[in-house]
Length: 276
Image (cartoon, rainbow, N blue to C red; front, side):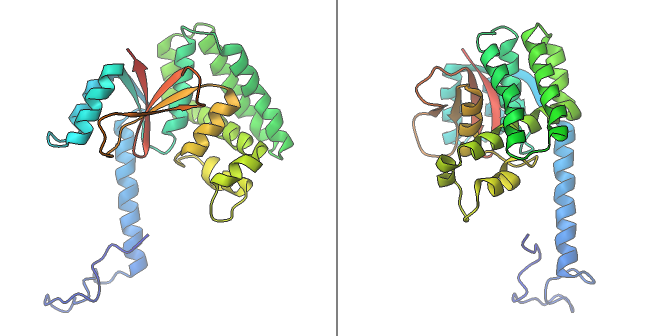
């Protein structure tokens, strides 16, 4: 992290502290103090927002932007033509996986068409991970928890119970971990293809160790492609960003199929959205 104190070359006439440093603190101590303050801010944000929010009108997004922010206001209005509601995920780096997991299981409460195939692929991922060298005793708990909640959703679990599972950090994070592992598994099983998306001369295994498996690591296209391919689920992502455009860009993963789950992307964050 770059030091947060002023440039030491700048001139100052305020007493003996010409460098602009905090008296008695080294650069490292200043950086540590700034880092602790940022962590505290993140914790306060986390405490004020559930991991998975209530369903709300998509037009509520307008309150997040200034009246003169024409690009975002226009795109939110365009979004509302196709989508009626959204459900916010906590912005903790796990939002795509949580949106994917909750959004699909919520859909299972009323539509079980894809359940059998999805369950089979989610279950088999454990054996594939063991073949890749992941320890079976570690995988067992994540695998069993995921399938237990999945089966519950398919067998009539009330929505409030599903929300409770995804809002409780322990159970919710177990589900996110298993989705991350499924993603890592598919990437490594298809390394020849996905290696083209990895930079810094890293192997797919190294990429998974640092960018996929750890909690709080944000997701990009490579993660979405891998997870949707592994579980054979089509996700439509609506991109609402600051690019000057008179339309919203939609991207289906994979392309050419009817989407079964819809997700809103704003820079660095994903939420579930519901078609009209």
